[in-house]
Amino acid sequence: TSVRLYEMFKQKLAGDFFSDRQIFADYLVQNANDGICRLESASDAARRLQMSRRNFYNVLHSLEREGLVTHPTPDEVVLLNVASLQRIAEPVRRFMNNEM
Image (cartoon, rainbow, N blue to C red; front, side, top):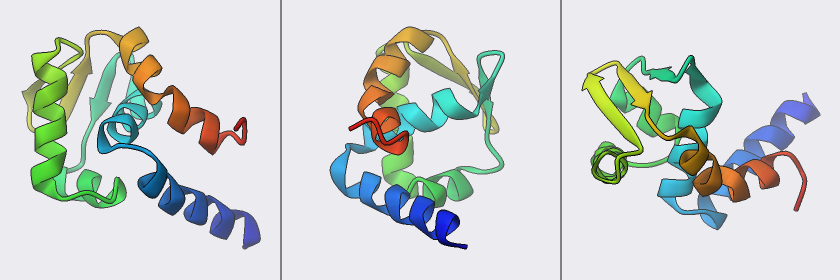
């Protein structure tokens, strides 16, 4: 349907407008339940975020070094500082919600 195509187009544009860090932070915040984002696999998450697995892990490790997340198991990311992640992701969220 046209709504779904529009959302897919916006997702593609977001990849061009925003940094991988911002897109990854938005993904974590939007998909977390009780501060935990569960991943089916790094490959699937990277593909969904339109980035390579290598860049996926680079961004993840960067957020870990900053103390914003931890990655205790291969299938989960624990959000340690949701407010900071939300700040990083805010431009992406505003774009996706048509607030820009």
